[in-house]
Each structure stands twice: as C-alpha cells, then as structure tokens.
Amino acid sequence: MNDILACPSCGLDKTEAIVHGGSYILRCAACGEAIVATSFMAICNLDHPFSAFADPGPGKRPGPEMLIAHGPLRQISPTISDAAREGTLILLIPEGAP
Ligand SMILES: [Zn+2]
Image (cartoon, rainbow, N blue to C red):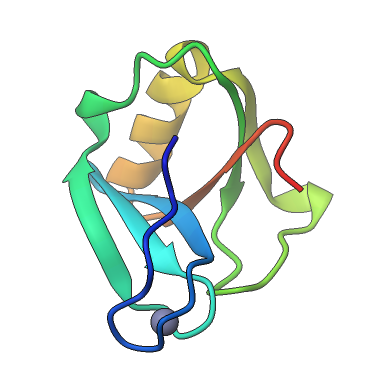
C-alpha cells in the first residue's frame, strides 16, 4: 500500500484507509480530508493481512471490540463489503503498521 500522500488541506502525510460503500478512500488522520478514492474492488484481492474495524473517526485508534474482520484482505473482503454496504465506515489497518 502506498499511502505516502500529503493531505492537500493540512499537509500531513499520515493517512488512514477507509472503505465506504464500494469505495476505498485514503483519509487524512488529522483533518479527515478524503485524499484518494478508488473502488474497493480494485484492492480487495490483496494477500496482505489487514484488520478491519468499525471506523472510530479520523486519527482515533479503534478498540478491539470494534474489530470486524482480520486476515488476508482477499479473505475478509466479503465481510468488509457486506458491512460497508450497510453504511458502516470501515477502517483498514495493514498488519505490521506501527
Ligand atoms: Zn489533513
């Protein structure tokens, strides 16, 4: 995942990966500005493991009780799609991220 994009609003380069409906969005962790949006389908076959959480809001760390799915994105993408389709914002955190 390359998420080394600076926010056009505040210049911070810390982004969060959000799935909303069928869209994949990079959101600034500071001000919540959505930076890049692509289709979730475009990334849902990644083998990299992710943790998917119900979105706690920009810059906030989700609690373990908010975990929706965990594992290779290819395996958990149906669960994520279902939750996203119901209107839940999904925060995707790649395994091994600091
Ligand atoms: Zn920002």
